[in-house]
Length: 185
Length: 205
Image 1: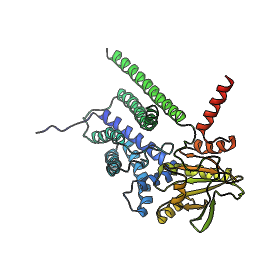
Image 2: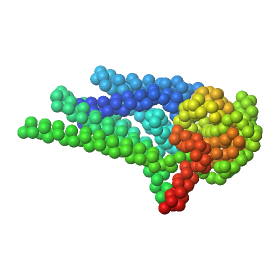
Image 3: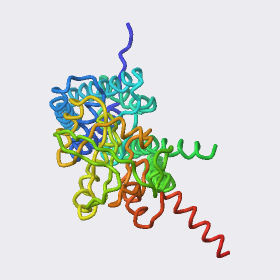
Image 4: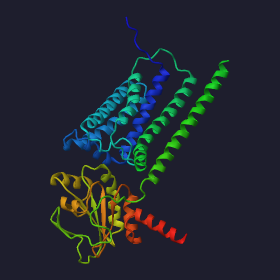
């Protein structure tokens, strides 16, 4: 018989909290500029116009409940499913538009301060998040969390969160760098 | 032994967190640098009517049957900023709030006209969705061609006498304001401004 894949409860908690953080910041960005997010949803051109506003609102609501569900232990399994679902939908939508060649549109994922055109790196950014959502849903080893585990969890979530911010900023910087390199050719 | 490992682990976490914070700060700084060293003002592209010359006259019919005159030799009350945009251009959308604030703050001397082309219904939806009904909105491929608008968002500034004062590609609020500056300083563009400065420096040297 194949042994089932298990995950340490501390690692699972790290992944859940990190995903919650990512979705919470996404909700914040979208609530600051809902009009921009609606425009981004429309630009993906995968929905009839009349559905754009309800679907955009639905995404914000989904992200909000997912972030909350991930934090509360009882609802965590639902949170994990929600996170995986949202990430798959977003990644699929980006991939679909990349395949269609609609790379000029705003990805709608960096918040109102930055316009980020679609590119394949966005898929790569979502990949670790998807893996985390999958891993966080695995059955956990039966071991109680010690107080030291919480030090690990808090520190790891902070460190990974900052790495996520770094990755986003690098994506934002990329067009500037490209423009500079072109200018000096 | 366990205590030593715990301490070592804690110290390592603190170092990792400090390093992550530094990486975030550095990458932000790089981002700011990119913003600053990118072409500082609205970049001039292509040909079309030249700055300082009479802008060709266009008698156009805006959406909602508003008559709009662009350029020409009659004296107008205010200067005109023609902002070329399209419902499908994401950068244009980020600049709409800037246009709205410019419409209010510069209304003494400036009239802002939006120009686009393409399907009327899509444009009307765009106007409604973004509250653009306060701007005259014209659909004219001819106007875009006349000014050789190749990339959006693009803007031209025509003064009261119908003279083209500045033009360029607009990506940020600073770019838009650089057009106003260019008009006040009587230079064609930011590139022109730097070149003139350099010449002046060479003469004094």
